Length: 313
Image (cartoon, rainbow, N blue to C red; front, side):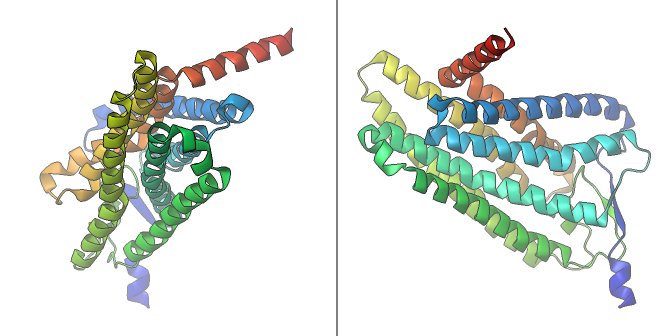
């Protein structure tokens, strides 16, 4: 029993880029600005999508879910990063590490599936426009969203449990900014081949299969758009789908690099930067991408601002 207790530290030291102290101030500024923009941008999309009746459609229902995911994900990681950058002892409690691992993994897994669901919604809207309202009814939208959330959290329960069961033998220095599965596996003092194989298999299920379905959906969408005779219709279809495709590329590209590449000491710092990109920069860019390229959202913002000014008068 004593050996087991000794193998579980009371806290972890998050090394991050502590070997490069000159990076701490620039990183703090970038993290803080990104976090503020992420909170404001995603909250704005959630509020506008709920208040504007013209956005009460399946597309914006799923976009609201995505904004909520990004909001919760960054809140589970960035505040702790900001505290550690300003602290001499860059630590996180064992309980805090477990919570961060579970929440970030659950939300990240959910987003993998939700982006695939959003591409299916666009596929139906463009390829079968006359049947769109019949196929994408409210019950199906709720079911698809629920499946994404439940699957994501179920995956997190499985992976978190397997990771936390690995004996650490007193090791507590995590060479990362946050508690992630690959970083925690490196602390184990036993063979982790089985865990790495399981992580690779789950990553294929949650990354490669959804991105393959997304690519197939967009191949069909491109064919359908090219058959549209109206130039304005083509432009609108490509504009809506282009926003989603940019988000998909940013998220899946960095996540696949992080979880499906073979472990290599040379790629250690690259892995940290990639993790920061999909964990901080991508959630910040999502609201900008969807608002700058979407006339419906920009119009909803203008109507909301006009309504606020009318109330004040």
